[in-house]
Image (tube, rainbow, N blue to C red; front, side):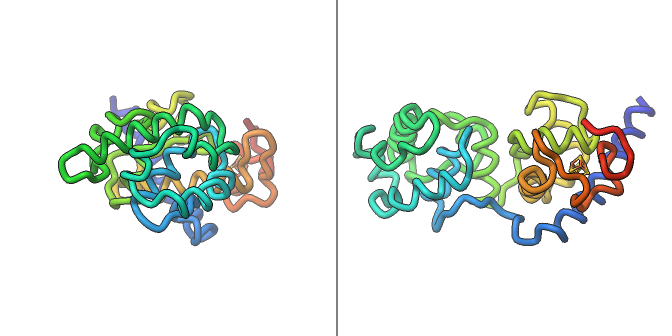
Length: 225
Ligand code: SF4
């Protein structure tokens, strides 16, 4: 037990150092790169984002948001009309179907607003834990969990912040070592690193800000993963 706590404390200190360095390196990446002007647009963008790049989502939503402005607009529409703007999004047919169903649930709920809890969000069709975490954090500044995407998985493992593969267990590990108020920015920082130097297939340790402290750094003669 003592040994496990010692490991946790060591990881906690290391995570603090890592996040401090990443914040300096990526000061403009503290928030999502999904473009939005209000909670409706944020919800829709994040909803469409799984298995798709932020760039592609932004490209597709530009026209969509000029035609659909409220959840009522989506709720009153049909898959063909919404899907017309989203053909570049992976799995767009399923996402569009679920987006319309979710919009109907939101508009029919008391107050007609986006739920402000993980539980409430995850009751909506097509909303998983990662999507719910991003909406809560970016939309309401609420930290109930840490959004774990493929970049977070790769980077967290290489940095030794977790030994797990599953997003749920990685999220638990990170929640134990990162202060709650930083959960949202921590996810965005790890994603920024994963998109920049710590890409899954081609990491570039030589130009990575963490090359001197990372246990997987190929630039400091350490074994890489
Ligand atoms: S040093 Fe290499 S392995 Fe470590 S975080 Fe940077 S790019 Fe990834």
